[in-house]
Length: 400
Image (cartoon, rainbow, N blue to C red):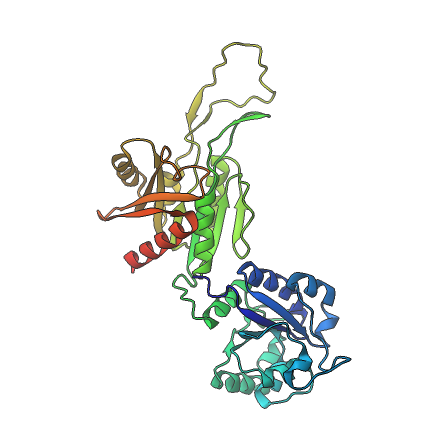
């Protein structure tokens, strides 16, 4: 599914104050396992350092059309690899007009005039420059040549004016890069909320109630959703998994904290899909001790009470497609379907904690999906990432 993997991409940075955002874009592209070489215009060097770009891309940064020992043809540019695509981020009005009119007077414009590969421009400039007739005509010419233009966004600009000219969101740019390599983004512009990991319910300052959830399944769903083009918000309990670039991650500890964050997110945004993959603690201590409970008794009793029912009370009210999870050890199908009905979810995913390679802390999973309409599907044991992709594709097609 990752169409960007192993692709060779030349990133051209031109002289906009948005040049600093190219650093994060390099990181996102390399996270997709693509190769990146950076080319920077002289004016862009005033906004960002070459050493930083070289370190992030792990390649020499190209700055000069004619190095000390130039070679013939395109070899004098010293590209590290044969290109699959060129992306110009940020693209100034100057480079847009040059590219449209065949001007080749420095390293970036010359490279754009010679290389016959897909080219993507993500403009960033003052709103008056974006509205300038010359820029408008240049955009028309570039589109006519089948180049990709990622339009700037409306917002406050560096000049403190408000208008259209801000560099597009990096996730939007990444989706357009994926499209260059024919990746299908059926979740493009969809908002997806995912919960992952365990919760910790404190007993005293040093102890808590929790479970063995690693968060791997929820993180796999988040990663796959992002690669299908979604705007992902991940609410995660305490896990040992590195954060996923390109998504919004909100860290929590307890069930109450998770519910508060979910409530806040649902009040500010409409989500198309909600995956409740977190293993939320069913119970929490009735009372919290401000001091450490001493181990001076052979038997210590702690009274527990039910934790908040996030799925049944908070998520159920939302309009999006709701997917619950059910981890069982026996009577799995019956328990999962009953849970789906009582929680008001559209789907429920069942797996077994006592099945080897399918429960907590595993890299693989074996799941069963049930829908409120009576449908069901088994997903054979596979890596959690591959299971996540299959699951998302199935639910998306089922909801079309």
